[in-house]
Image (cartoon, rainbow, N blue to C red):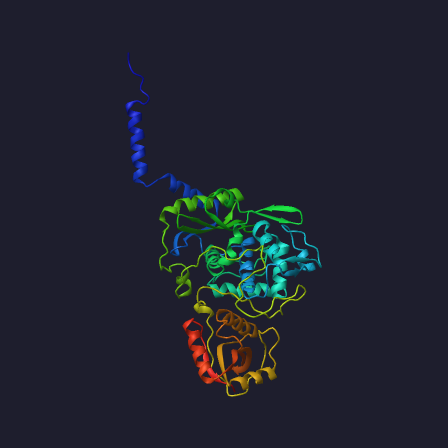
Length: 464
């Protein structure tokens, strides 16, 4: 009895030849998967967070709308104020008409009501509530427009060279732009700079006034090791996602922008993470290829991500003596953000330290809780006749922002020193010196040397 042949000899040879050809051409299932992932999103980047190595990128520097990925920066700025003691998780934030009028998605907050900081944070992380984002912006920056300037300056300080923010929520604005690379930088910074708060991005559900909201980030529910961090969507941006995943001491950060649907966006992220997981290092090396290549400075090792602070508690690490604001109070519009990045400022943002002009300084503004007046400057001069100058700018807001950043970076060094700006004219332009007062000659010099070791430009000089 003859045997039944499944394939004829010619057909079997054809199959064998086809397989050999595919292997020779390097066509694999994973390759096909990556190619398909490419078609599902407009831009993407995968980074090994242990080494900062970029494992994959596609159009990573092309400008696109961030949509609700914007809220990652909103929280980064808020976390800086919380660490500085300006807000606690239980601080009540006032809801304005502007905040309440934001388009959905939102909590439908009422004008004149209040909401706790911890509820605002979880509303941003889970429901991506636009009204809660505007509440944070107004209570921190005075106005949402000013908060957008704070966000943009913070982005520059972190090395996000191409990102501009105009609002705190990510609602459509043609000038609000970012890149996949910049969003990866932000994700890595918020993990490294604020490990005590980062754990909130793992929140799967949020309850508020009898309603329960589910996190929009589906990877938290179905992709092992996901620790966050944020989804985003507008019609102009498409579907965006920044994700962080940790498994077996490996740690990947991914950003995909411009997905056609939420499901395709998620599938593209999973495909890219799976594809490059084998390339990830399980040990933290001192490689700075990613952030340092943009900043030109070394990146310190990432601290442990394990939270040391719960949003359910009012306990918050305090690094300055600034009091928490009352619910109805807001910082002045000129109040800068207090970012505490783990790297030095990018080269482009470093101010030129101008030589002092030969005339008495004019006190222009202050970052202290009460504005610095001429008498208080005189008091500081009596306490010490030297100043530490940390930069000169053509914009008073930039000078104030520099003072706030330096004071936040070195709170112990500058404890008790009075920040102020003084004007001088050069090349028919008015410049603003950013200074701290109240030093002896030796204290000013030693403080400036310590700041320089932190890669903060400064000069010590006698008060005029």
